[in-house]
Length: 77
Picture 1: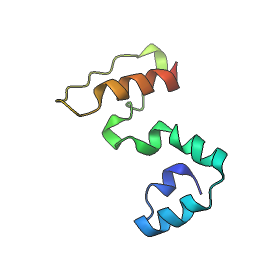
Picture 2: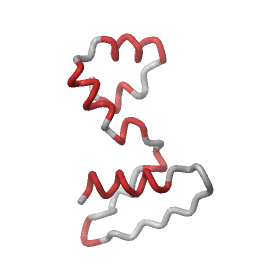
Picture 3: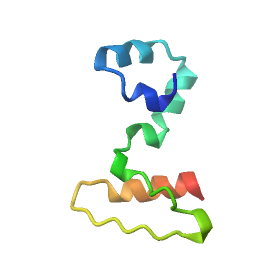
Picture 4: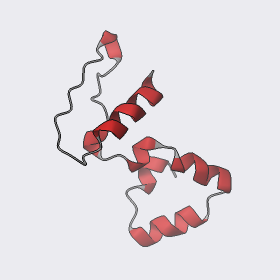
């Protein structure tokens, strides 16, 4: 089971799978941004490749721009 696939499970199956995780696995999941991010909060596929680091996020209050930007730089650079 991968973290990305766990996201797609129905709620009851997800709870059962999470209950089987070790404390270390739960902690790793807690800090795994792609698990919590919405699809549109993930950077474009070519972001960071070929020196392309421009990604404009036009969104309103509460969308998660700050968290998205912070997580993107933490994980990509």
